Image (cartoon, rainbow, N blue to C red; front, side):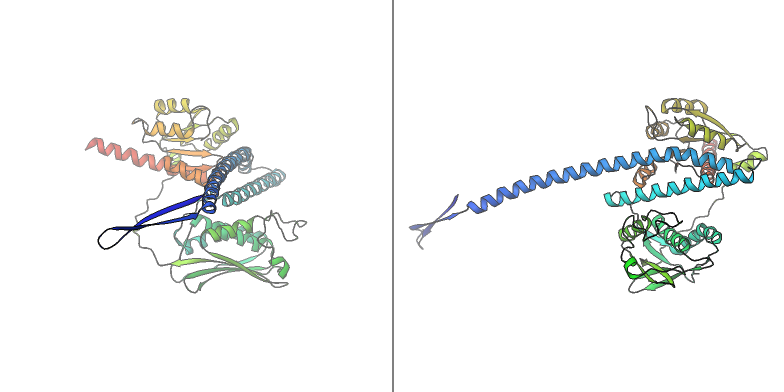
Length: 441
């Protein structure tokens, strides 16, 4: 292939003096351009295929999470009911129930770890960076981990903060990271050992959280393998449960938040795991007056009103579980519907104080049913709580943005479930009082 270029030459009087003609071989350039175009087409196809694969993976993860959590909801839900029955179970029964619950919660932990790792690798895990008060997170971690330490005879010491300490991170994920590191420090410690938690400034603008244990310690070759998936560093034959995923997820979460993680260890002395997050100045915010939530249960016991709860669910085991939970609430009367269409009709007719809604319903989905109720002036004021086995974070965020009052995941935690009901009832009472005030004015 040849490219031609011609230019006319004139003198000062604009008389034509000649023509300059240049020609060059552009075969290689044309071949390069064609190859580049073909590469771009191939790249676009590869990107489209990767996007399709990621979507399929996300859908699979969401489906797998739901399918695994649904039977666990029945196992753990009824296990908790049996544990707190009146009259109390016999010592033998209590021991059996404890084994069921322990195994169930551990299985749920494994499911969460595997899903977290898969979500991180697919780039679908959402991280919300904000100013996080480290003092509060430490207190929450302390209350969550102390009983585990006491059972194993481990002394655990947390830092006290003279000044508020803020870091730029995702609050939920920081707590997940610290709980994982603390659990490991307790799990792999020696009998009568100790765990020391410290917070120090790390130049130029970071906060380092160190967790020091008095366990067996790790040799250099084991340290090099610490953050490899499914590598338990020779603990496979031990009595300690684990998958070798926890530290991998921890490191990925730290990386996603722009932090750093590391470990030092000495055989026979112990190990120190540390994480660093970027420190931030104290944010300015207004503290609103917190209104205490009045317990509806206490109201009922003192002759208070009976509130109607509508539960829309197609799974018989889940319906039975919630029926038994609500049987413990003398302040509540339960109505049930097995699909979204019937749930909408019952909500309009019965005007319940609170609606509990499954997401994956036959016909009209729980999300669509909630939207229909919120767009109807007769039911728009009713708080709708989602109760679903889908625990994928970005799906939860999407459902909350869609308009659900709260989002509870299965397996149900009884205390969390009851607290959510109390919050929804308090909200409903506030909305009712506001509506009455508006009518009077």
